[in-house]
Image 1 (cartoon, rainbow, N blue to C red):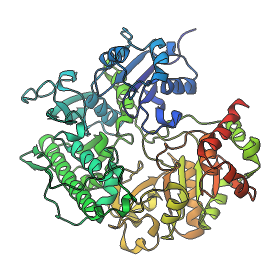
Image 2 (tube, helix red, strand yellow; image 1 turned 180 degrees about the horizontal axis):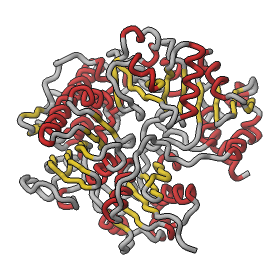
Image 3 (cartoon, rainbow, N blue to C red; image 1 turned 90 degrees about the horizontal axis):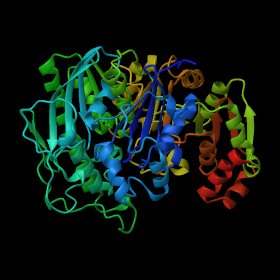
Image 4 (cartoon, helix red, strand yellow; image 1 turned 180 degrees about the vertical axis):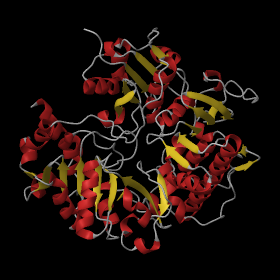
Amino acid sequence: MSKQHTYVLGLNTYDHDVSACLLRDGEIAFGIMKERITREKHASGFYKRAIDYCLEAEGITLDDIDLVVRNCYILPVPEMEDRLVYQDMPGFLPEYERGDAFKHPWFRANSNKIVTISHHLAHAYSAFAVSPFDEGVVMIVDGVGSYRSDVDETFPATDTASPLARESESYYKFSGTKLECLKKVWMEPDRGFLSDEFYNMPGLGALYSRASSYVFGDWNKCGELMGLAPYGRREQIKPLMEIVDNILTVPRWTPEFNQPYIMDSPGKWEDSASMRHWEDMAWRVQDDTEKVLLARARWLRETTGAKNLCIAGGVALNCVANGRLAREAGFENVWIQPAAGDDGIAIGCAYYGHLVVQGKPRAFEMKHAYLGKSYPEADIKAATEKMLVKVQIDVVRSDNICADTAKLLADQKVIGWFQAGSEFGPRALGNRSLLADPRQPEMKDILNSRVKHRQPFRPFAPIVLAERADEIFEGRGNSPFMLMAKTVRPEWRDKIPAVVHVDGTARIQTVSEDTAPMLYRLLKEFEALTGVPVLVNTSFNVKGEPIVETPRDAMACFLTTGIDHLVMHDTLVSKNKLHRFVAPVLDVYMDVASLVMSTARA
């Protein structure tokens, strides 16, 4: 029997945000982040479970894969896997995964069908290869990329970086499938304690992570830092970096920054005496970052004359900076990869394989990020029917789930919304979302106290009907991936206060009927009831956990939080009177999760 399809698999491996993306004849079939399967946020380690998810979803085996393209930003994958054999590095390959890794046919494989590429090259392909543009330029900015010695692309030879310098920024132009590197910015290694940690290196994304470590004790809290920035006072801290004639200078930090967050310090973070200083630091690094990115983008446009800009890399998740780039950099169009961080590396690897290794033309545009598999009704039924789950809930099949849900939302209920395939990337875009009414300012506190348990300064985002967005938010253009911050028009701020940040902005997601039909219908029903075509949208999870993937995950989160109702497809689940008595007995999350998940084995 002849093979029906050509399959390319892209992988981000070993360090944070391990992920897989499967192409079927050049189009994305499925994509998944390992964290959604293992329930460990930013999961690292071996990639078998992400591969298996994609293969199972497509109904194929390893033998059906024609090409595998991988990246690991620490080292090229073959060298990384050699080291994992003789070194104990549990952060990259925990003991419980070593057996699976060593038995896997792709581990340390010597095969022409398995290719490794460098980090920023993978980011670049994730950005332009699935964009709507035939030609344009690409901006890649992240915390740290590959060593210069490991970069396997042609770049300008005028730089004098050492072999151990790391990628910090990369700039390209493209036409069709052709990609040309115009500039790379490197970070040189430094001496001293923890000097090999990227956030101590002199780079744009590295500096943002350094400030995140200073304020939150974690380099990967950059989103929180962005949310804190509007509370800071202007110019209270001297600039942390400077760009002149397109040359970036990042000075060393000095002892004047003497108020780092200490993890074991008593009291709550938000009650610290250093809070004012941290707010000022957040403002400073955000302002510096925006200025540098604008300078780089304007240079890129003036150098090439390009009209279209594509962006990826972890810094591309900074929606405030993205909004400024869209407004002020002078490009006609800006497109940002929804999985701009290292999870999106899998997409870039896959398309490098399709376009470069296989020599195929570009033909696919990434119009949505719903790359997960859909779960059958049997899985939803199973998640509701375990005995100690069933006694706590009422289950109803709805003939018009969007209308019924809109009524509950208008009645100030918090809804867990579970539909079709999960989103690929860090944002919940309406298939694994918590939804609420934006008309009451108290809704932000309700979501935080009942479910999210986040810092009170962090804003919640709105979803809005695409055709109504320009009426409510300043600045034209769609934002389907929640990666642009826009100013809320003054006449709407009192109408949707739950999604307006302290600076009058909102991180919006525009919803179109062709890419998210169920979410679109829900917004239309809510608009018909309230006159407001906007809902609060936040990820379906609690703080510190990944977004839910399966019906079992959704049920576990529903039963252990203050979510009022759970909607899975057209099934409406509500807590009954027994829940208040049963839930305290099962008050440890893992107990409830295990209870729900054991359904699969029952």
